[in-house]
Image 1 (cartoon, rainbow, N blue to C red):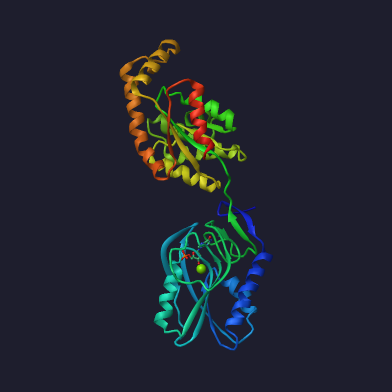
Image 2: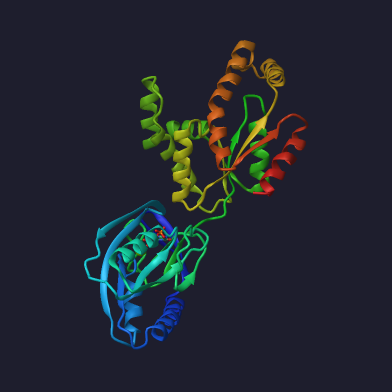
Length: 368
Ligand code: IMP
Ligand code: MG
């Protein structure tokens, strides 16, 4: 495993397999361009290594030209293709073989095709070391493909992640760990704590309650705890960055966990986005937001009951209880939408026997 710019990658395609794929492409090109004098147009930066290997296997006369284009930022396509070094050679009436590292959405190929038409080439074809059919949105034929791969982000052999990894001699894939990370929601009195402790046992998950994490960091006077306290003491909200750094440290304590139950976080879209980034950096993601659904009147009854025995002041006053429930719905409405858009929202009926509710939650988790 390797780390590039903080992301973990694992070996995916060996150098041997790559060279074998290049042999095959070279064989086909040698056959199709026998006795011709093609221009190989190398698309920088990523294709340099593939081009070197491919050209060293070309048996006839040829010329080599370069253009430099980019369409990626980090691990995602920007949808915009930029030309950094334009086509300078005269390709009129020439036979051109475009050498690409990878065809993903096809945006770059589209732009190059337009370039070829404008240049007035006699004929052109595309040779790409990799092709991701699952994300290809265009119709242009890719004449020579080394390897077809699924939609994973890869680095190595010329391809980069934010500038790094091009020098690697094998292909590495972004490491995704199959973790069951749950964001657990529920209005006050819904039984979130009770259910979290059952789920934690059953699925061997780590329960991260933001409140507990805060209290622990402040009590132990960690750097982040002290920082958080400085805001709290001034009556200010703790900035998201501090909270997320604390959660990140908490997640790092058990890197081999089966997953985490996030409780009390996120509370805003910005926090949800920050959580996505945090988990992505650790090669994982939120699997589901599960919200326990309980009718308001039942909640009020439950909390008033609890107030009688627990002595918790905020459970004794009906107006206070109703306001806490309202605050919950105000906050979660936006987050519900956020996770619904990603097909990750699951509402679970929180009324019934405790074990019945655990069973309902389990049937959601088992299908993730
Ligand atoms: P397209 O324009 O979406 O087809 O993307 C082509 C360009 O995006 C490639 O030449 C690469 O620079 C970059 N790219 C696409 N997929 C990956 C990948 O998995 N790793 C690294 N770069 C990639
Ligand atoms: Mg490229």
